[in-house]
Length: 355
Image 1 (cartoon, rainbow, N blue to C red):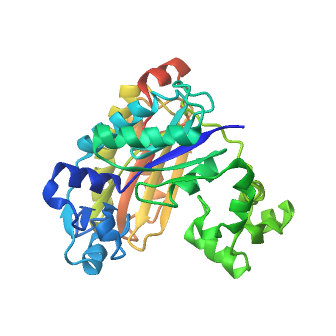
Image 2: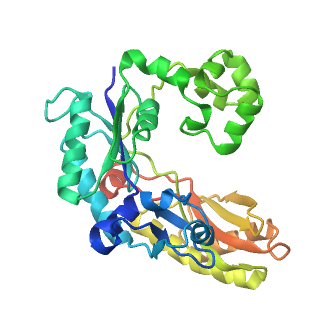
């Protein structure tokens, strides 16, 4: 039986801003821009009381909380805080799976400090994070990743929730489907329309019935409502794709302007893949239209892409397969996948961020 901890930093970016600028403490802080296409990267708990949420348009956040203090993101500061937190994790276990700068899974079944109790380890990690970064984190502790992930969000901020192995299945039965990690808003709405509001409701269905309603995800729901999640904590995850994108300040209709942007994106992409020696064969162009409809177009080439000319030629061909020039575009991206990198090189250089 595994001992899994999920650590989630509390309002991470906003908390770093409040830590580094004491004048912001106690104020509704929003990291992001309030004008144009700006979006909320994160908001302090003071701002969340007004309904401000991550990924919300900055203008909407300003409407909900006129007194909010908007600050631009400082990613070097966030990355440095994240580095310290991850160093703390590795004092206890080498099995650390980062999900982003502000959260990670830890498998402490065999902990380096020989503490034994996963709950006590989580408490000590939280204490060290507060002591060494002046930030707070919330923790979920249980026997698998899914339950630990859900548990970490139950007593935010600065909370800790332990789901005992004997209580996991009962916990899943009482959990609202909207709180299932990985169940989006639309899926939750569909479940509710079908009369499924809790894990207990889903548990009444056979595996076949769940698959007929929700496709391949039905297999996952069948296991998870019974508290079964066999996914290991993966300290080394294979990089599947490398991508770059840009959201325009104004929607773009002109194809030549889009090609110019693709040229710049392609140069940025090649710099990244050259740095890590990750050469792929599949080129993907991502487009989000003014109405937020999103499409991707891909093409797999016979050889790995190393030259800018080949990457651009393929990207331009893929752009023609979209409605570029007919519908205004708000976001444009380009990516490479289909890597055949060496395992030791990946371990040496770490992972890259995805789209």
